[in-house]
Amino acid sequence: MNAWIWRGLIVILSLGLVGTSQPLKAAPLDACQAAVSADWATATNWSCGHAPTSVDAVMVPAGVTLAVNADSDVGDLTLAAGGTRISFNNGAMLNIHGTLATTATATSSLITGNGRVRMVGGSRQLFAPNWSAGTSGLRLEIALDSGAVGVSAQGVKGGEILISSGAFSTTNAVRPDNGASNTGSLHIAAGTALMTAGEIERTGASGEQAASIVVSGTLETSGSRLSANNITIGAGGLLRVKRAAGLTIAGAISYREGSTLEYAGSVAQTTGGELTTTAAALRVANASGVTLNKSTTVNGELALSSGALTTGAYTLTLGELATCTGGYEVIGTVQRLGPALATTACFGHPHTSLTFTSGAPPVSAAIQLSRGTPPFAGAVARQYTVSAPGFTGAATIRLHYLDSELNGATEANLHLWRFDGSRWRLMGRSAIDADNNYIELAGVTAFSDWAIAEKGEPTAVTVVDFQAERHVDGVHLRWETADETLNAGFHVLRSESHEVHGARITTEMIPSQTAGSVGGALYHYIDATPMMATKRFYWLEDVELTGATARHGPVVVQQTLVWLPLVATTASE
Image 1 (tube, rainbow, N blue to C red):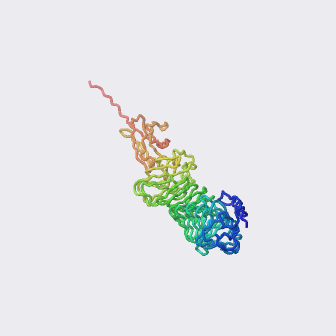
Image 2: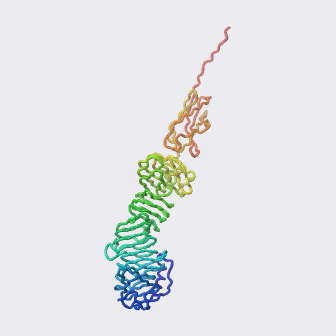
Image 3: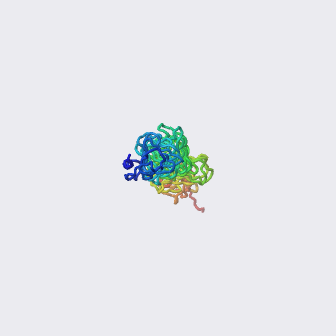
């Protein structure tokens, strides 16, 4: 077949394939056809009068077998089907600068020997439309220029498949196969990439395992299966999963320190067999988010750069050195084991964290985030559940929120609240950052459910007793509280009639003894102003942290008037 025909097909097909933005020009190459079986380097055996070069289009016809005994170059290479066309010796390499093609789809034994076919050069289509899976024993290397992308709509097969430079993008299967079960290897070197929409396994039979898949660069797959005895994502390696349901793994998959598992689908994804119980780093690059299908531990970076991670019924454990990056967060439960004192540990977001500052650190700590429903009226539409078994001491807690969850609250007035088993109590705040959307509180000594709100439940203070009693030195007022989570202090008001609005008799507010904390207090105030009427009415006015006030009472004090007889005396005469 004439070389210019293949080059014309390459230009047309490359426009519709993944990963190329540099279609070849359709300039025909010089045509070289082998006459008989001989050494590849024998110049007289070629119709072009010389051993092929990188600018020659070569045809090896049926019945001809060429021995490649030394490294050689070729432009396009077309092999006639049926029998062996290329036989490698001495570990020689044949560098193909154009496209590899056959005259039929039966290519099971076209290339043999211990050499290597290397696809080199710039971005282009690497395999012609009628190239089938290839030779099982083929040693195939993709060694394109740095930044170049080779594309194919055809499946490729080889005993050894190596991506050593550049990238290869195929819409079909990749089959590491050396001709027997559990054979064949695929290696994606550092700085390179393989993008495939097909399966990676030894044959077309589901789950047929190759010997090994090693990813030191990037493996991006929207296919459904990876099948090999050992699948290793090496240091610096990236497995990018685009399939909605994750991958089915046949064999054992492991992640080395410094590797990354990334989810980058265009619809919501659920993890599959690619997620193991331990991963070095986990990245969500999917705006629709990812949901776990099992509990797992991440020991490196948890990067939620483009979407949220939902744990559902499972737990995400972050290792001792794990970090959190990105603007999205984990919805569900995040756990840290053995947190150390004075070390800030993130829990699924850079601004959701705990720092145990004193005392005995807990055996473990966990924060569960629920979003969408305010825990009480007016609260931000999220709730945290924090646990730290065995913790005694003090900690600093930082909790994150979204502007879209403010629920009508004024951001500058937000505080942290904790549920004590019966009601939400104001805990306060040490810091608030409206730009990064978090509230922080130091000196925390207990954990349970936490909320973020401007105002709490209606009661600012619970007054359980309020009494007034007249003494020689004045009226003694006593009151007891059970809870003052919102209370700043008290004023006392007095009136001579219950129908008259009482006036404050306290010149300064009596400060709360337990403001913002659990528990109440006892108070005592003496009104030393002499009573002029038979009755006095007293009210207790509590003052919220917001400045709002509420009255309790009145209580009544009554004085008893004693009428003494008037005795008149006269001077003696």
